[in-house]
Image 1 (cartoon, rainbow, N blue to C red):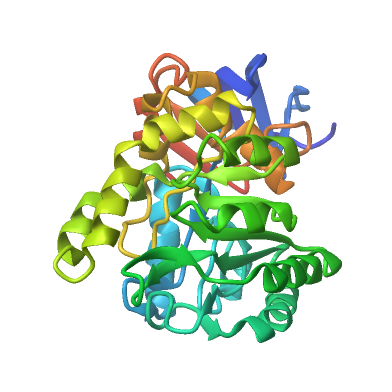
Image 2: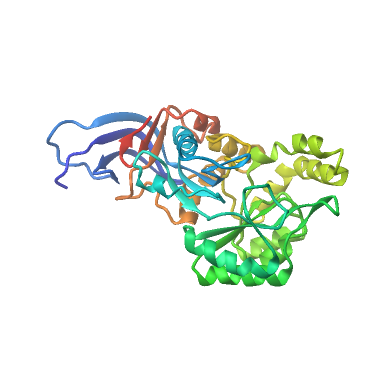
Length: 364
């Protein structure tokens, strides 16, 4: 190697769950474990415990509680994630065009799922394409072509006539839509709080379920058998009691259901993990929640009973592999986070990175 390094990282580099190294270098914005030829000045040295850039696999850049936001607000959202060490974001639905972020070397990398696709008047106003079942496959195909390999459906939402959560789509429409996405080379995920939408979605070939609070003894084996991942967004599920209190006067059945889903949330996630369902971190930031909460989400997975190593993998090695992005492999882009202490000993350290390196530059 003829280039001199710009960074030299010493400490403990957590390349993988079982692969821990003593140092790495950054040359031309990429990771290397081969000592570079010196020349042209000494590299900047940093010391600490190193993880690949964290993954928030369910957030929304370009969206707030009222709908699309301007570019300045989107920038602040992305910067907040960056400061928290979240350097790879799967944007699980946004009405804003955030492609300009791809041109910024100082902002996280984003994998987009296009805009939410929801049933008419069955989702948050100004968020989604609101359509009827006959148009679902066509809209899925369109968003598959606009996104980065993912499409986001709203699988269930409150039905005002029933006064409770219920499935948004008939089985035939789901089957057509998921087949259309797969033909376009995209994976499909769906917002699902409740129980009744899950069998149709999973049996139709869906790839991921968001929130997944409605998993039961009957549907957990179904997801496990088919390799369907979940992104529980536990920091968002923590808001269910407040939501229930706000809507109880008008929709008491819905409020009771939301409290029940909240009460069993940790048992649900632990049972899914124990069954072999892939579990990944996501915060649902960008709607009503702030960005930068991925460290808290890892802590929530640990509270649910997932072992620390697996909870870390849900935000690092495993999540990056699932999304098709490299971690700390030789030659990979230098996107990583340093901590003062071992995150395997206490995941709370994830909430306080000492340094953040993005595209080979120290940005924090």
